[in-house]
Length: 367
Image (tube, rainbow, N blue to C red; front, side, top):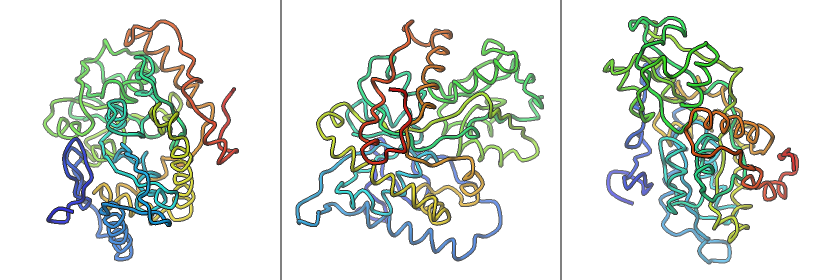
């Protein structure tokens, strides 16, 4: 472990301090009343556990032999909560795995790391999964770990003349290409009788959106949490947020490389068992789970608590993923975002057998 309390968690070659947001992460919002001492105690305990679990250079099994290592590319987003909890609570170690964490600000970057053979597993929403498979990449989805109809929205500045959705016309709107941000933006515009041609779209990484709004480089952004709620808080009464819970259900998933899926199936099952333990912990101890996210991401605890109910944390595979992948593929073909013209058979890339062997009630795919 390096000096100054820095832990050896890698993010594109950078070291991350768990006491603060890692490089590239949104700046925590610090307004609000002072947190209760008990809550800070949980955060301190979570941070201590994080240091112990991640700071160990060699983890050994009960037999005394080193545990097999896996590298997991996961995000600082709330969608990756189950992975954060599994790491901090030691569930991966209990299941015989030593995890090498690799943090990213969003799922597309995490998936890219796995596809570049820098990680074995990745947490990612279905939109980058869809684009990756359309491009011929070889990997599998083994589980959903989160679903939400409330995590994507457009937040805009009233001073830019925006008070209702149609006011977006002609405005500079930030979005993140190849992600749920792009899909939600187009879906929302369609529902409002608009299209992207009516806007001035500005490609932005999610961690750049808050600054872009502050500098008035854009009039609005289409994004997810935590940047969504941070920008909403920054703007206060000078901002307006447009949700639409009817047009889109986000899924956040566990992707695994073909090499690991075919060569280390026992590691895949152990990984899923650890996540199922985390699912139970989050359901039974939500405040401690929130404290773990505070310590792991540096995000303000008030913000984490405020958005918590927007997420359904469950390890499962149901029809939602398959339906959404197909809906998004039709969108990508129509918008000419892919050269493909034929719908892939996504069932070939949704591997449910490992989860079915562990938690039979968690899978409801059409086979």
